[in-house]
Length: 362
Image (cartoon, rainbow, N blue to C red; front, side, top):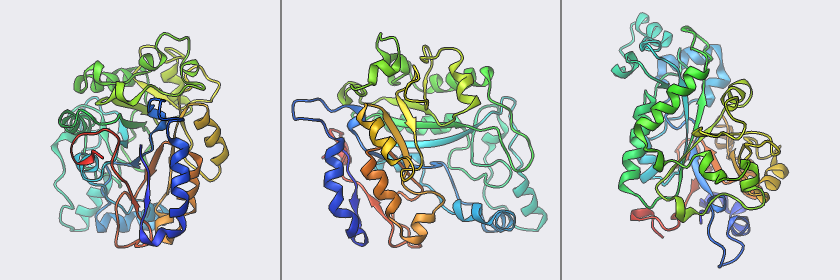
């Protein structure tokens, strides 16, 4: 199973890691390893590339806290999977059915007007129809995978080469907000249909663990996992699990078709007593620590963030990481999955994953 190893500067944390690890393991050697027994590190805004210096200055002038929070760049997805051994990712998705909606961001125009050289080769894919992956259309627009198909293909190609991997989780945030024009399109039934068709155009249905698979004939998802947990890891190696980051209106619209997500591809974060309850998003492990512990004990899968806005790395503060670990949350998200010279006292490292082929095999 998955554990975290402290860097030398984290000796205060190291002593607690073994006890926390045992909380997530199978109850006995005879009990099969279930998906909810895993602890998987992943990235927040997994596609993100920090703004170039001129655009970063523009952002800082209007929103200094935001400028500090987005000053990080993630590796391409295949390197996060292979080199870093990460197994869950977050993708921010915007609708663009006609193409070109985000092809000329305001930040890029302002940089050009100031006489700055082009900050990057702007991808032609942004002019084509389809769902786009980026943080904010106007200014924080740099991305390693400009389109959702590009992101999915990157994951699938790596998965094809490593068929024994534990399930990979893709957290999808469906965004329709912007701090600068153009105004993004709302997510509705038409957008959901495009999203699911885009996923199925890359991943065959049998390569995806969907809500119907987890429900397995039971009346609700909650009944399927409550006190039992998610399915065994070995029965779902090589598969992808799609999770919806949204709560509120967008989530409710997605659930309107079926309150147990029948026929749907994405799991949603809902209340523990909801018929679709299987996955929960509790981003603050300090405020929600005890609740996360109860959810994990009940068999649910929980995602939390071990840092936010680069604030903990800047301070070398491990308290949030400690609480995330002791909560038992299985999906741990970070903005800093590898050492950064700017933050020498903050580093999370991982050992091998259970039963995987290749360099991650224990």
